[in-house]
Image (cartoon, rainbow, N blue to C red):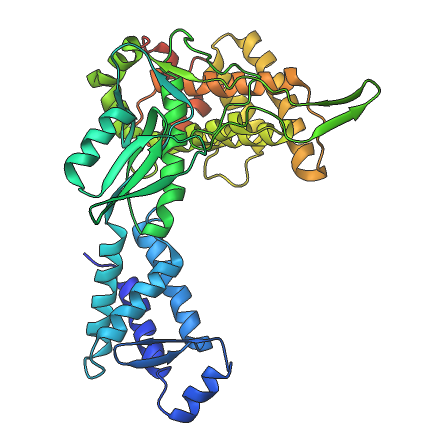
Length: 437
């Protein structure tokens, strides 16, 4: 059922649009000479971007984001879809009828499904493994992907990367032109829904969530597993092996250098984990969370943890790891002291031992003080030990949620259970046997 508020916003847009239609040659000439904020032409004439039309477009975009979600709505695309719909309509049709068509067109555009295929710089396959799926995110070999694309599209081929690392090249034979898409041995294949101009941002977020979700499943650390202090390579962008430029110092000039990038190995063991019914179900909850559930907050936590590991600046890593922790432990009580609340909640999750819990609470409050200095004074001095501790805490809290908490539980109830335990006793989830996911 369509929300009446978006219908009202769409009707206001239609009426503002019709009022802005250029009605005289004089107005059109003035627009061509640079009057106002611009114009657009369509099937039934020219419309001027008046202040009223621009305001109506912003209101319609804001309403569309609320109704359909920011992950699938692109504000300028909403304006384009609405404009094209009104342009194609007959001016004699009632504005309310055209408004309904505008909303239907926006809904349709927001629900288009796409597959975003990108280079995977972070994972490597071993043995016979070529395909692992985590929710809408798939890690797949170039060979397998090339077969799938070739079977569906005649003029597109996926091939290995060239020396120049061109994204694509064209070949032509007997008048037939073919595009060669150059990709590394392992690729990302992300199923995403929404307006085209928002898809890259959304696909990147889903990949970041998947990376932390996968990382939490490893029981050993094969490959060149990223450690606490490592800056994790970007999952899509190529790794820079050598530093550009040079360094001048007491020992003369130096240049080059660099370290090998870390990476995650996907072997038969980890592939089997992701094929298990329990992990498939957990992934479904994480990537398609119920509104206001623990899963919704857990997805946010996972994404920010990945971005924290990617950050090179220590102070930025601190902020992002705390953003991850806050994603999980911040509730709707705006009057509660956030530092104390989060430190208490994290302590309850960490241990049922009262002495250890207080020591943890004190340590996390001190680390939170570091975060506050970064936010409020621009402080940049961060010791590696401090950073490692914050990373370690965030990782363990995420691990506890993954293995101890019902992700379908309302987030408010999750926080209530923790709050009750701050008055003494154990957090209920600590009494649940480890699920071993």
